[in-house]
Image (cartoon, rainbow, N blue to C red; front, top):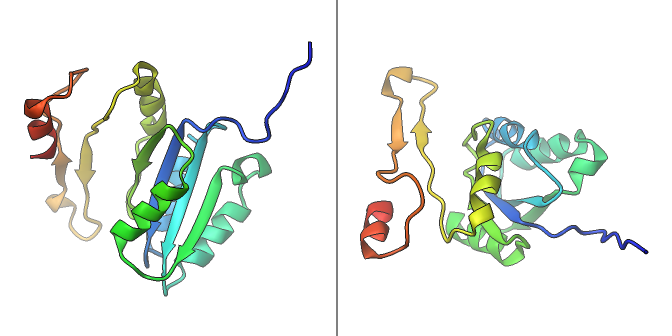
Length: 166
């Protein structure tokens, strides 16, 4: 029996990161992700016309990754059109069955991707997470950005959508 090895394994998750002038934060963002990346995950970084050193920091970061991990990162360059255009450009280029967005000044928890991969085993339409807002200059201002009112699995209906998007 012959096994066929596809050079491009099926992508189950596309992580889209729009980038615009975040030289101070982008390395920490990518560091928080890189130990969690597996073969079935792609990271799409959309440079929205950055004018600072963001792109150089990203290039250097990816260059220093092991070869097997480098192939999971894709960089798209576009002229500055705003975060919505950058996200849409990422979506248009995504190969994953699921998509998640991370802001370039965010850090993700150590179990972020494992939680997503676990949750998508039951093929949900939507996954909602907690978020925590932190301020370098004044930690006393830190707060929970979102606390899902609901935890567990639910059938999507108007009431659930109201809870999620309100």
